[in-house]
Length: 83
Image 1: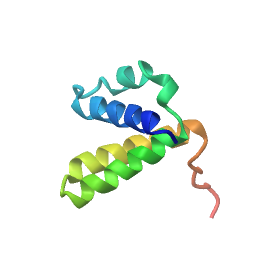
Image 2: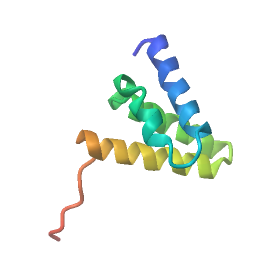
Image 3: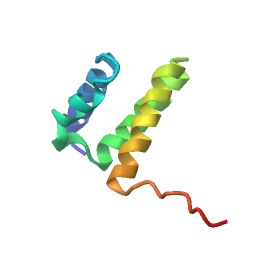
Image 4: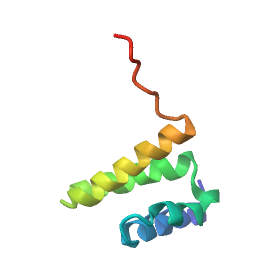
Protein backbone atom coordinates (compact mmCIF):
# COMPACT_ATOMS: atom_id res chain seq x y z
CA UNK A 1 0.00 0.00 0.00
CA UNK A 2 1.39 3.37 -0.97
CA UNK A 3 2.00 6.12 1.55
CA UNK A 4 -0.42 8.34 -0.36
CA UNK A 5 -3.17 5.72 -0.12
CA UNK A 6 -2.49 5.27 3.60
CA UNK A 7 -2.79 9.03 4.10
CA UNK A 8 -6.09 9.04 2.20
CA UNK A 9 -7.39 6.29 4.51
CA UNK A 10 -6.27 8.22 7.59
CA UNK A 11 -7.90 11.43 6.32
CA UNK A 12 -11.16 9.56 5.73
CA UNK A 13 -11.02 8.03 9.22
CA UNK A 14 -10.41 11.51 10.66
CA UNK A 15 -13.46 12.83 8.78
CA UNK A 16 -15.57 9.93 10.08
CA UNK A 17 -14.52 10.57 13.66
CA UNK A 18 -15.26 14.29 13.40
CA UNK A 19 -18.54 14.15 11.46
CA UNK A 20 -21.87 14.60 13.26
CA UNK A 21 -23.50 11.39 14.46
CA UNK A 22 -25.53 9.81 11.66
CA UNK A 23 -23.58 11.41 8.80
CA UNK A 24 -21.03 8.58 8.53
CA UNK A 25 -22.74 6.99 5.48
CA UNK A 26 -22.55 10.33 3.63
CA UNK A 27 -18.85 10.65 4.43
CA UNK A 28 -18.18 7.09 3.26
CA UNK A 29 -20.25 7.57 0.09
CA UNK A 30 -18.25 10.68 -0.76
CA UNK A 31 -15.05 8.57 -0.84
CA UNK A 32 -16.26 5.17 -2.06
CA UNK A 33 -13.07 4.57 -4.03
CA UNK A 34 -11.23 4.37 -0.68
CA UNK A 35 -13.62 1.90 0.94
CA UNK A 36 -11.80 -1.40 0.39
CA UNK A 37 -10.01 -4.13 2.32
CA UNK A 38 -7.03 -1.84 2.95
CA UNK A 39 -9.33 0.74 4.49
CA UNK A 40 -10.82 -1.87 6.83
CA UNK A 41 -7.31 -2.94 7.92
CA UNK A 42 -6.40 0.69 8.53
CA UNK A 43 -9.58 1.17 10.59
CA UNK A 44 -8.50 -1.72 12.80
CA UNK A 45 -4.95 -0.37 13.16
CA UNK A 46 -6.24 3.07 14.19
CA UNK A 47 -8.78 1.47 16.55
CA UNK A 48 -5.99 -0.51 18.21
CA UNK A 49 -3.91 2.64 18.59
CA UNK A 50 -6.89 4.50 20.09
CA UNK A 51 -7.53 1.68 22.57
CA UNK A 52 -3.90 1.86 23.71
CA UNK A 53 -4.36 5.62 24.20
CA UNK A 54 -7.45 4.99 26.38
CA UNK A 55 -9.83 6.33 23.72
CA UNK A 56 -12.16 3.38 24.09
CA UNK A 57 -15.22 5.06 22.58
CA UNK A 58 -13.30 5.98 19.43
CA UNK A 59 -11.85 2.48 19.21
CA UNK A 60 -15.29 0.86 19.60
CA UNK A 61 -16.71 3.12 16.88
CA UNK A 62 -13.95 2.24 14.41
CA UNK A 63 -14.17 -1.49 15.19
CA UNK A 64 -17.95 -1.37 14.68
CA UNK A 65 -17.46 0.43 11.39
CA UNK A 66 -14.77 -2.02 10.24
CA UNK A 67 -17.01 -4.95 11.08
CA UNK A 68 -19.98 -3.49 9.19
CA UNK A 69 -17.88 -2.72 6.13
CA UNK A 70 -16.29 -6.17 6.26
CA UNK A 71 -19.73 -7.78 6.24
CA UNK A 72 -20.82 -5.65 3.28
CA UNK A 73 -17.65 -6.57 1.36
CA UNK A 74 -17.94 -10.26 2.21
CA UNK A 75 -14.73 -10.21 4.26
CA UNK A 76 -16.39 -11.04 7.57
CA UNK A 77 -17.92 -14.52 7.85
CA UNK A 78 -21.43 -14.61 9.19
CA UNK A 79 -21.92 -16.86 12.19
CA UNK A 80 -23.76 -19.98 11.20
CA UNK A 81 -27.23 -20.41 12.63
CA UNK A 82 -26.53 -24.14 12.91
CA UNK A 83 -24.63 -25.31 15.94
